[in-house]
Image 1 (cartoon, rainbow over the protein chains, first blue to last red):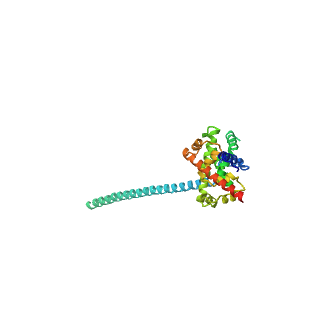
Image 2 (image 1 turned 90 degrees about the horizontal axis):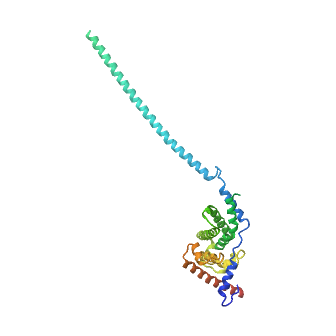
Image 3 (image 1 turned 90 degrees about the vertical axis):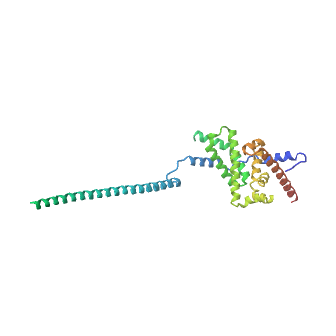
Length: 113
Length: 171
């Protein structure tokens, strides 16, 4: 880098510009960039990790929701069964009282004869 | 190839030297520079519809490349990369020259001894021929800061260049 007194600044800056001209990109650089662009444009197959994890998450959600619904249905069925037992007992109780009253009335009638 | 891909390919071929050079001269490493340069062009592809002209594209590329390359340099320093530590510790010129001489010319080697912010400013001035006002806009830096970086960087580079000349002539 030869510098002359009085021209030092100019020649130094000229050399900077000379040596800092843009250098070529490595061979094949454009092709590698285009390959990555094409890769991004291609739709992802289902077995790609991102899709696989999404599928697993969907299965977990469906299983949990399914379990919650099953519990709800069981509770409803249980309540229905309980109501039916109560009704059955009520009917039985009513019928028994009616039978007892008839028997009592018959017994009174026989005694009076 | 469709029209959008062809437009992008044209821009890529027109600007790849500029982008790679900026990245290489900030990072001092060809592999890392190519990685940054590829990422810059992928980001260009995603943002193409926002850019209005070739000048706009060139300005966008310069700004994004400087930022990404500087970020990569910081991450490398944070990982404790030995080569990056050399720059930050301000070790002697000879060490830097020995490591990268096969790949870089003398000015590129001197540039690596500057702090990253000064490197970016110097590249936009002497590689890209931008005026300080335009550098301030592209790097989103105050004009006074740009001028200060240029002044300090030139002073440092002159001193190092003179020292090297004396060492070579002695030696």
